[in-house]
Amino acid sequence: MSLLSRELLGEVLGREVKSGRIDIYDNTLTFAYENEDMWSDINIYELANLCKEWAFTKNLDITTSRTNLGYIATLNDKYGEPLSYIFDDLTSCYAQPDIYINYPTLHNEYDIGKFYAKTEPESVFKVCKWVYDQIKDK
Image (cartoon, rainbow, N blue to C red):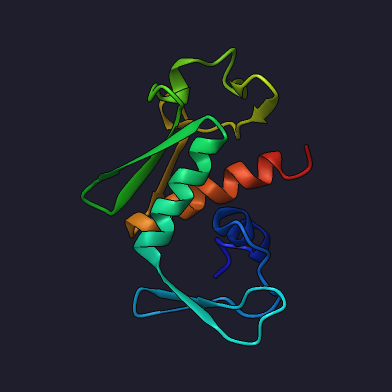
């Protein structure tokens, strides 16, 4: 699954994940931990919850809501305030004192920090991938 790299999956699960395939079938993600030959499984809804917990360790909070077309995952600060309300400008904000996050310029400020998808787990994975991409080299 392109939304979850092995590096991000390892961060969320707290263990290094072996390079190789990460498959999803019937709401179950199958992967292998580093130095193990056996495959492991996790329900994608449980994984989405673990992703939310991982984001919270970064002083970020992910909330989801249902729409007519799918789901929206919103990235909030650790107090539950949408990040769109605490911007210095439309392209950057401080979500945490030691991590500077650059946001993509979107159509309007109300779209900042919102990630749309057909399923709730996919919307959460999109947020976590984006956060991970912002902080992985810092």
